[in-house]
Image (cartoon, rainbow, N blue to C red; front, side, top):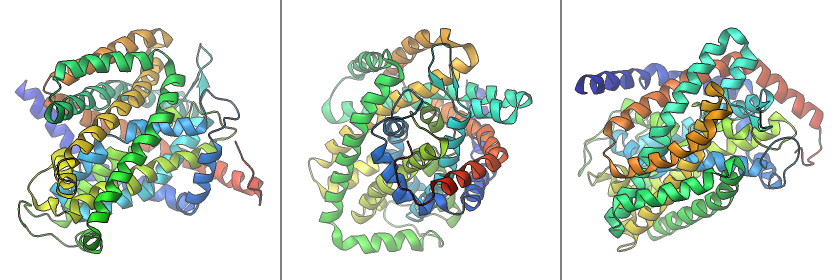
Amino acid sequence: METITNAVNWLNGVVWGTPMLVLILGVGMFLTLGLRLLTILKIPFGFKLLWQGRIPGGEGDISPFNALMTSLAATIGTGNIAGVATAIFLGGPGAVFWMWMTALVGMATKFSEAVLAVRFREEDERGKHVGGPMYYIKNGLGPKWNWMAIAFALFAGVAGFGIGNMVQANSIANALNANFAIPEWLTGILLVVLVGAVLLGGIERIASVAGKLVPIMAIAYIAAGTLVLALNAGAIPGAFALIFKHAFTPVAATGGFAGAAVWAAIRFGVARGVFSNEAGLGSAPIAHAAAQTKGPVSQGLVAMLGTFIDTVIVCSFTALAILVTGAWTSGETGAALTSKAFDLALPGVGGYIIAAALAVFAFTTILGWSYYCERSLEYLFGIKIIMPFRVVWSLAALVGATLKLGFVWLLADTLNALMAIPNLIALALLSPIVFKITKDFFETRGKSEDNPF
């Protein structure tokens, strides 16, 4: 087992190394420039479409709003609490700047993914709309590229059980046990029941739960973060100064912080940013392919907001809370660092807030990723796999809640990177289609601001 672990650890270092970071940022920058900064300039318009998208229109299975909420359910998770803290612990305050940069170019990546997902989606034997990287690779690039579509589906189908299920269940169980003394096995059983009850209703029920739970949990977390910042308002300018200064200069060791080079800030900022918002991984377009939308571009404009909301908004509250309270020099890392920051600002209750947020965030991630894995495995094995998958997926939460998952985390993190490779290659090759569809959309829109759904 040690040999296998070492081998996977080596592969993880390769796939999350410099070439991957260059590929993610390079493709994102290429798409951003190819779209003429549209994904940044059209953020207000995207929010308008998101609001209008509460009312479905066009072909699909779920509303455009609920498609984004399903995507956010999968992305707003442990990465927003533990991932941001880890980035700061390993890369220093400057890592936050590189998370922001990853998000800004990642918006173009997410936009392009959703445009292609809707453009090349299909209907399965049940009449449900299915799409995502495996479909736009097969239908957009042609049969000779199907091996790459199969590779993506395989990586996603396996990775989800780790990163999207057992790791999340483990985080929930640990948080509830540490703060509320709830046994891990009991949390695992509750998760099996709750996850199973939602999954049996398919994408419609997943989207319905996400559409209600995600806005509530995000607003509640932002409200708690705002309170922390308000109590430390005088330290906010200094926190921003730390972020911008150490994005380009090394940060020396101080307190429990070991110090970090600029390369560490870039590496961990980009890696944790991608881990949080999933731009480039190819997961989110699987949900957006099911949207009841009249066109690919309108859903792309909604989809890109997922990256903005996840990283530029939610992750920023976590990062600023850690910096303004001074917790970043404590020597803590991961969720414990975020918990310490909130506890310093809100003694006696801060830790409980983070535990509750972590539990809800991780639960919705399990729901969102269940859909990604189900569609990936359906691509490989057909609709006959759906019900067995839902049963196994629900039971996997019990396994995750009660076992140590060091190797599972490592393997899933590696497979996440392997998912990104075929997806990013496909995005680059299919970019002319994205550019043309987008140009045609805005040319025909003219001056009309009517609902394009």
